[in-house]
Length: 171
Image (cartoon, rainbow, N blue to C red; front, side):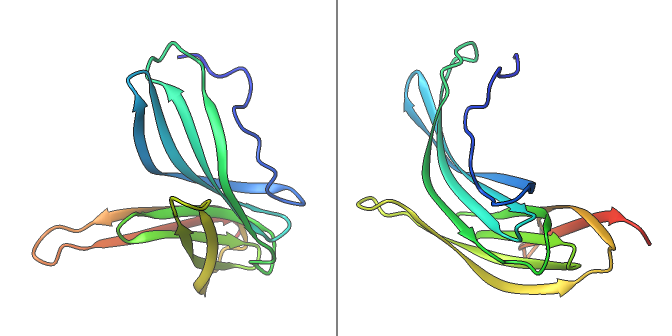
């Protein structure tokens, strides 16, 4: 499959440089026999210390050969000054049962956890908010990466755990 020749969507998310981005598919549906649609949450962090969230719909043909992709921004939200320094890493995790969370990190040497409050109402447009949950210090001097995953444990007390990994340079 060839790469697209141009972006399908450009988002204005930050007043200064965007440093990191994470996305998660929230739901997908078949529009009809020839088209499919997915709802995606995109998060980004930047030099302006802000976290931005964009809830979008992407519609595309069922056929791989058709390049007719359309996008619609359903809602956007920016939490200004969400960190004490530039945000260098961001990750969205979660599901529709446990909710969605955003983890951020930056030069302030902290990993912060946020809850995404996404309200979907058939009558009104969706609304998004970002609520701070907690943060913890980390000892990584030049942080520049953040990733994570959810692991499901097996057995009698089956539960899920979220693991977050931060990386950077320096001792």
